[in-house]
Image 1 (cartoon, protein in one colour):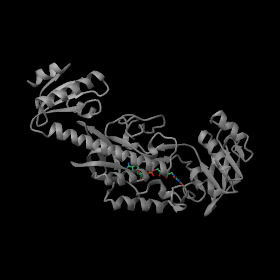
Image 2 (cartoon, protein in one colour):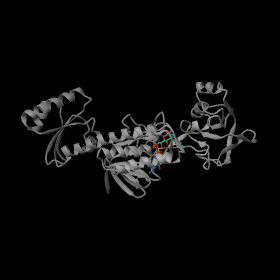
Image 3 (tube, rainbow, N blue to C red):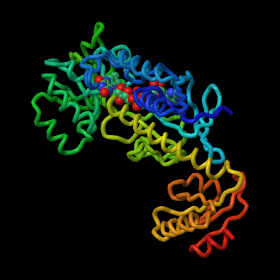
Image 4 (cartoon, rainbow, N blue to C red):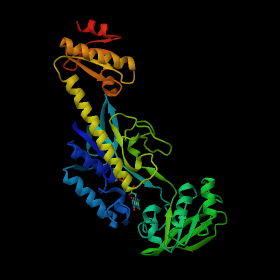
Length: 398
Ligand SMILES: Cc1cc2nc3c(=O)[nH]c(=O)nc-3n(C[C@H](O)[C@H](O)[C@H](O)COP(=O)(O)OP(=O)(O)OC[C@H]3O[C@@H](n4cnc5c(N)ncnc54)[C@H](O)[C@@H]3O)c2cc1C
């Protein structure tokens, strides 16, 4: 099977940045993408909040990100990831073009906005239909627009959009919002906001750009038209994670399916990292996705280096003694210090491994409890014993 150091899934801003950082750190990087590298920014008309570039077509920014990753000789592969499996402690990426074993994986498959599914929605995306107020709000200065949705995002983003638009309708299928009380109060006290209750959008119409919405009252079935220059759809977003199987079956996910990570972008599975919009996070934008991508790559680099180091001191040598302790147990820290001192004085070579930080290696060696002292020959365990103090270490080494 093909074996690679770092496999990145998804070539959006997060994945491309991970590739740049991974390659610059000297890793062997394979970047898997099922569509056009660039991700969601390929469908973004204009980007005005990528620092250093006042205006850019989204697709131009996508091309420059891709060129940057290519410049550092990232290997791209046009394929769709269909699954990830852990087999005997190894991470296997399943794709429609075969399987790849990876030392570390970065998940960067982004998110998709839930769509309304009505006529005209796809046609006018980028031409007045938007899913991102921060991104596109400024294009509607002094216009009348609509927001669709009734949750927090819809109500809050409607408020944000009144900085630009003179009138913002909020079209909601019920007769009350599902948002927080404060958000609702703020919306009701904003003279530029007008709710359109019990209504759904039947179609979005215009001539090149959005000009009107056809809406239906769900109680009376009455059809009416609402002239607007734009419509923001906030009926939810969802991470692109179908290849991860049942929720939580591989990595820990939060409510809504988002991938749970710590600030090093580590998921609940050692050696699998997640970056960008698919993560549980506060702000989903290019700038935050690229930041995540950089962190994930550097965390993956540390992880891979550590794994390679462990292999070189534990698995590859002809003969080695290894003491596994836990760095969160003071007694075990003391034992490690005493053993290190003894090894120096007596000339015995002992690899000192933090079993707490190297949980994967501990699992691989089937260590149930720490501290453990082992004798290995070419990666095979010859002897293993649970030690309690320096005397028991000395006894084992005799
Ligand atoms: C219309 C629109 C306008 C926006 N405007 C702005 C803006 O002005 N400013 C801003 O900062 N942000 C904007 N955003 C948000 C921004 O684009 C995202 O935050 C950013 O792209 C997230 O990057 P990402 O790498 O996490 O994910 P994505 O960009 O979603 O990239 C994920 C990539 O993974 C690939 N992928 C998914 N599943 C698989 C699989 N199974 N196998 C292989 N590949 C897979 C996808 O094809 C995609 O290329 C906008 C978004 C949209 C939709």
